[in-house]
Image (tube, rainbow, N blue to C red; front, side, top):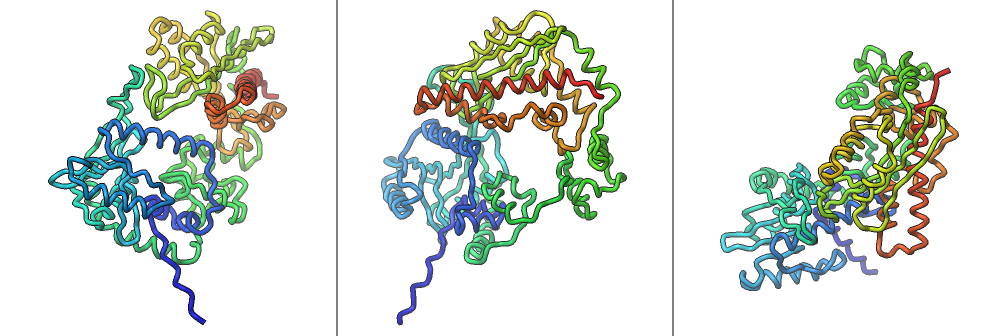
Length: 496
């Protein structure tokens, strides 16, 4: 009986190698157990934005020939690239998505500029700066391209210019900047053969046994995290990782044998907040400072409880905005009088047009000339108001005055309150259930800021029906209203 043909070796790629560098188990799962991969809506939005920026970058790099065969047709992509590179230089000076293969590693290069004295490899990233992982991306691609016979003598990283302001419709000149990273990449190139060899061993072997840890989120969030965590026994009820801004202390405590916060000796915690969290957790009692009640009681009336929801794009959509700028598209405002009477106003724009001027006008109409603005994390809302003041000079004085009237409930609670159930977080969704459990986000279709952004994107999408848009509007309005109603309850809480 004839023996079966030996299995074909798995072709590696830049992204697969980078997955393996972050975690060999992730690489193995991506190739052998793809059902373990779970991309969230936020990750998909980032990928879509990266794709849009990449497409625009081709025009900003001067245009060229696109190798259109996708990842399902690697042989076609390699053949098309070879054909275009065989043409005279002046007929094909720039290729996009050029495909190269070397030692069973295939890469697609964002931009490949041909010159008489050698080739320039261009990697496009929808980021505002050069990062270490991008250097590795380029080193892998350069190693493959050179191995395929190309004389790559210059490597560039094209990234987002965060100083760019979108002023004229359709004019993105200046959005892209190129950084020469040739010397940094050359320093990594000698390491690539061993990296590739180790990745080939991973994919040919059994599933690596690797526990979850910091590598699951550095440098990127891993889509296999939920799967890997499901394979592990439950962790401690109060892991030491809940301590905010723990940094190197995490490793020190783990080395000392600490896993549960309740087991950490007090002398190992030097930061006041860390000690407060540990003490409350060990005693299972909330910390409430003697000053909290007076601070809340003496906030004057009328009170305006305000919350913004924002969206940001890599490629600016609306004039006057910049890459990654947080664009307010919604607010909720509860006005509370000294008698306890509440009035609610709201704004939400899901037309897909710029929401900025209507947002400003509605906000200024909702807030009277006197009384504090109560917010949860004043830095966020104050920054948005400053940006709006710069964009609309005619409203500048009034918008900046709102910033000066802010009272930060987040700051008050972080300094004067902590409940063990918060598990190290002072987000409003962590604090609220410890004081007003009857107010819950759990039953909302949109229940957090990330879901609000995703809801907004679905609402403004061209394929969304009128009925779906109305449903999403209602969900967004309900969510933002609960945010400000939650602040009303927290501002009026009185410790017993």
